[in-house]
Amino acid sequence: MINRYIYKGQDVTLDIIMKIEHVVRLISDQTDRPFDECLYDFYQSKVYEALQKTGSLMWCESAEFIVDEFFREKNL
View 1 (tube, rainbow, N blue to C red):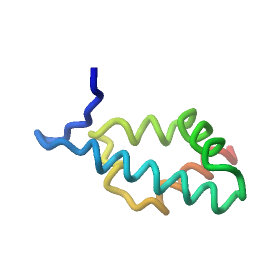
View 2 (view 1 turned 135 degrees about the vertical axis):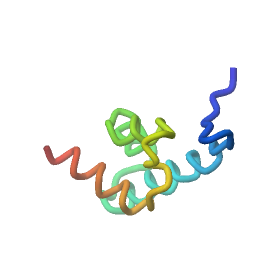
View 3 (view 1 turned 45 degrees about the vertical axis):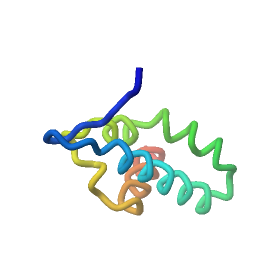
């Protein structure tokens, strides 16, 4: 089974996958941690949950905004 992200009838799967890669790369660069570790941490976050829900429109935000939200969540 292939997971797809659909928003208003449009397949936005590639957009979301590319956004996740960009976000995790930024987290990795800012924390000097390996990409894989950052990816695991991001997958455990509420920000990632919101990103998967196409109705939240988090996937429309910039990668920098999403990274800021991720760090804000981790600091709480």
